[in-house]
Image (cartoon, rainbow, N blue to C red):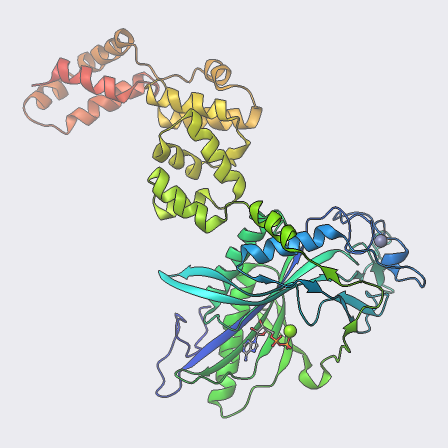
Length: 489
Ligand code: ADP
Ligand code: ZN
Ligand code: MG
């Protein structure tokens, strides 16, 4: 973002220009692919990465005479997501046809929801740079995904035509639309990360942005600071990482600001982000925008959701990330930053709590988990407990423990075996240490004199000598005590 001078509050490259300060207004539309085994309206598999068109049937192909059959699990997932984001749940749900023509959409319409989406009026709380913000959710609705065009044949590699893969056609999605409550690109990213984390905690979406399980379109306009009226919004598509989203938003803020500063007006349009060149380009203007001619799908009955179903889903919701973080801070005396790392996924959080049953020092445990260079949840909790206990007993130094854990992680062998094989215990045996200390003393008589004469810093020199002689395996605390006794004044 170095070369941006947007004139925008919060932009590090903000340039003060009298009377020319603009504020961005951002609303995000997220598509989350649901973790159901089967599609929204047929029993085809949703599995990613299969051979093109392996996961298809006449419903996926939109052949005449077939009827869609609703996957109830999708409704349940939508309710889960809605309850977790403070939404109201719509009791009577109607599926609508959204009509448009594209080769990856064989029916010529997408089944979606239009009026009365399943969830409305929710919110997600976020904190950006110490400031708490509440981002409203306009709606969450259920819809089916389209297929995919391949511009290169998957086997022959020919580029003579485009091919259609309908594996993704009919895969269930939630579209989650935010209010235009976001004011900075960073805020948008924090909102998205929080939303992603919630969906992952709920086990409704795997959150994989690279594979497209979580996709985001951004709507953005700018307005003079202090004014209320929204500017003309531009929609940006094709950003598949948090980094791209932040860059694309800053780019767009800069672009719109320059247009307005130059006395022009921004056009309502859809733009595509090019992550290579880091620019966005106009895809279509409002005039070319689709008229989708929504109407209720006559092949699908309205879905009635009763109170008892909602209550049951509510009572089965997991503890959500922010609540868990606050509890971890209070219950385990962790810093907010530590707690934040430990609750990043439900998996790490439950590993931490499971470990506490065996190893109750929450702060030490938190540090080990947070600083682990590999996914610590892959360790057997008994193995980790064993190693941490050996550190506390002085048998392993923390560096040795790291080495042991790395080997345990790589080989799956129990720590006792690794320690024995690698000879990795710390020497706490006084007799062995005394021999090394005596050697260090007799080899360095001058230094002993100087130390006794008051040169305290030579103590570290002797410590170093002993560590060298024991190849770093001496227990430093015991060495220090023994050394003091031998050469101390
Ligand atoms: P559309 O009908 O074009 O889909 P919506 O009103 O449904 O527009 O809004 C789509 C998204 O754009 C929402 O996330 C909303 O918060 C956001 N949005 C609406 N108006 C603006 C605006 N003026 N500036 C920025 N974002 C906006
Ligand atoms: Zn199918
Ligand atoms: Mg819309």
